[in-house]
Length: 90
Image (tube, rainbow, N blue to C red; front, side):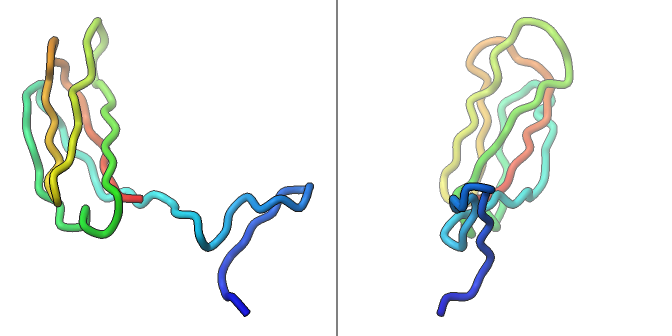
């Protein structure tokens, strides 16, 4: 018999099971409106993600966020804007 948490809705459908994964927030970093990178060892513990949140208003494009091994990179393609990248693994 399996052991774990399962959550069902009113219709008896599985909403969450032991085969599902939740995200784990690891931290945040200010971009200071410039390209950069940060090495986070915990990125090796799952699939890393980054979410950019601007700290100023105006017309702009969010930076491109990408990962290589345990390093997260962000790169502004066009207009730069101050913001924070929240990152973690799922």
